[in-house]
Image 1 (cartoon, rainbow, N blue to C red):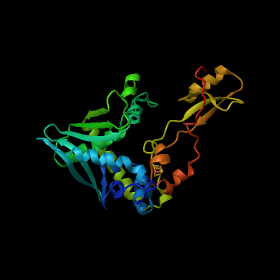
Image 2 (cartoon, rainbow, N blue to C red; image 1 turned 90 degrees about the vertical axis):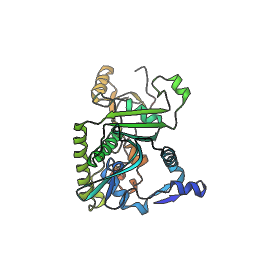
Image 3 (cartoon, protein in one colour; image 1 turned 135 degrees about the vertical axis):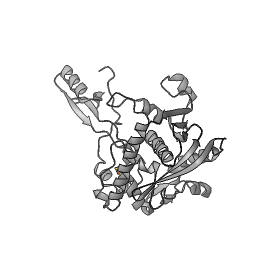
Image 4 (cartoon, helix red, strand yellow; image 1 turned 45 degrees about the vertical axis):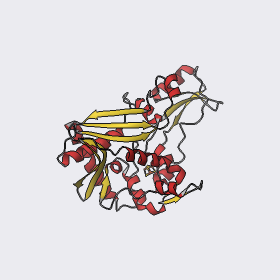
Amino acid sequence: MKITNKLNLPYGLVKAVSPEPHNKTGEISATTLIQGTKHVILTQRHWDELEDDVSERIWAVFGTAVHALLETEGENDFTEIELKQKVSNITVTGRLDNYDMATGTICDYKNTSVYKIKASWQKGSDGKPYGFPEWQMQGLIYAWLLQKNGLPATKCRFIALLKDHSKTEAERDHLYPQSPVFVYEFNVTKEALDDIESFIRRKVFQYEVYSSTEDNLIPECSAEERWQKKDVYAVKKEGRKSAVKLFDTKEEADEKIAELGKGYYLEVRKGESMKCKNYCLCSAFCNFCQENQNLVSNEDADNVSKAA
Ligand code: SF4
């Protein structure tokens, strides 16, 4: 990967953020498995052509520093424990930040933002909070690796360090995380381990099949893997640029239009894939991203009438 240095930052910083390919040949890590297969293959295939700037990678330094600081082991704890398990012709790997063998507790540290926590509390179309599906899968893959290596796994704990937490906001807004540290934990069940094994086998199969497929014929990453936002249904008035009101469902928008009467109409705004747009380094090589650049943005600064 080519690392540019637009701000002429010191060499030490450039070196600290310069990445190596994440996976060795024939291996695939837990954190790679939970990403889209197209993203994983295009990143590996075009590694030498990818480009990023030092300033864009600065949070990686915080992640590395936090992990280095937390390497102290307790009586029953192990840090940076590395596990492997062969699936088909691929070796699935996992590096646990911390593992307590006495209780079977897996612990992982995350440097993240307040936005990530607040987004987890929002409800999806099924009425349930989004939660942390990626962390859950990562934790369960670690639990599965432990089980395959004859070690107990009963609980996963994710300790999220919120780098942009504001005490002032916490006092002002009771729906804001009240502490700069957020803990997400869950118990490991047999059913969850069975499900994650199916997931691992499916992803390894996809990875093996598409590794020899040309770029444009690899199916795009799933909506979840692309961090696709929900579609938004805008009720618009003829002759007015901004929406009158935005709705999560077409039914609600249709109802509003029927209530308002003549001169109002529906505009469907397709949810953007945030990873493709802002966070996928191989997007320049991805036909899906190139062909879907013109999706209407949900972020359009509509002057939506609150009174409507
Ligand atoms: S641009 Fe989007 S669909 Fe394409 S590889 Fe990246 S995340 Fe996947």
